[in-house]
Every structure is written in C-alpha cells, then in structure tokens.
Length: 115
Image 1 (cartoon, rainbow, N blue to C red):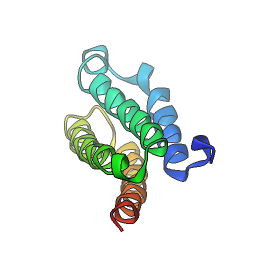
Image 2: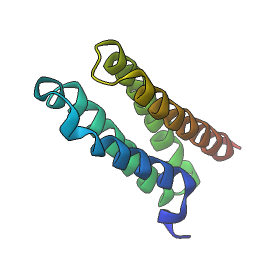
Image 3: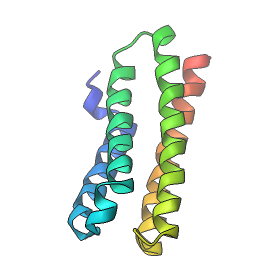
C-alpha cells in the first residue's frame, strides 16, 4: 500500500498547504507564536499518519491516539486564532471543517485498529 494514497494523509497534506498559503498574510507577532505552533502541530499530525501507516496493528494504536490528542490541541489553537483575530471567521470555519473531517477519519482508523 502506498502511504501517500491514504485519504487522511491527503486531507492533512492539503490542510497544511492551505494553512501555509496564509502565512505571509499573518501579522509578524502572530506568525512566530501561535501560527508557528499550529503549523508544527499540522506537520506532527502528517508525520504521525505516515508513521502509523508503516506500523503493525499493535504499534499503530499509541501513535494514532497521540495523533488524536494533537488534533484536539490544533482545534483549541485554531479557535484561539479566531478569537484573537489572527484568523477571520470564514477561514476558521473552512479549517474547522477540514479538521473535523480528519478527526472522523482518525477516529475510524483508531476504531478499526482496536477491533
């Protein structure tokens, strides 16, 4: 199986590209604080998805659960970005939809790994 064909990988990859595309429109004071933190979390999630795709079923579960926790951190940081006006509401809603879809995919993967 080609790990780049995994839907959750593709969705996370696209999320990063969209997020990265906004980088230069973000105020400098925010770009190197909360924005950088969000960017790092998205990259961690992308890395963990690839990592989990290469592991045995037994090794996969802890990685997926850690990834789920990272996704929850990302949700909180994105909400904070909206509230402190780093992200406008329209962009926040689009990112939130992507994050929710990634969360559903991840939840399904965790469930199937536990079965």
